[in-house]
Image (cartoon, rainbow, N blue to C red; front, side, top):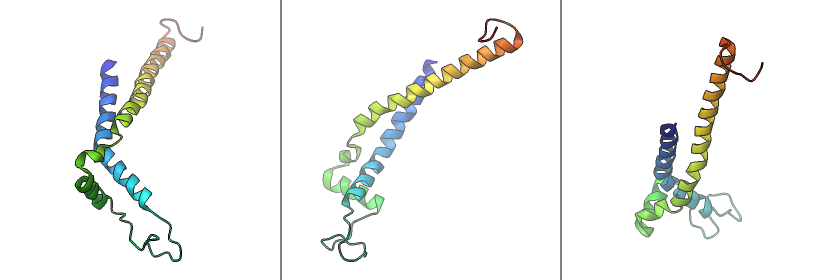
Length: 115
């Protein structure tokens, strides 16, 4: 029981830790996109091309702002890991309980939901 909750929480935390830099870089790319005013040539209004390469943006953030900036906002994401982990745990427990009830009813042993 506890092992399932712990393993799903650990998997969620590992997912957040590994993918947070990609989310930060992706957000920077989305924020940097400025619609062009006259032509659709991929340039923003100042004539500079917005960098849309995820790896280049990730390296630029690490170089100019520091590597730790890639994990900006990770704490909040780690807090949100608990909700799916608890839901997964409760789903597994409820499923096991319902299957046990069904098996008890079909074999004629124990009390069930139907008389």
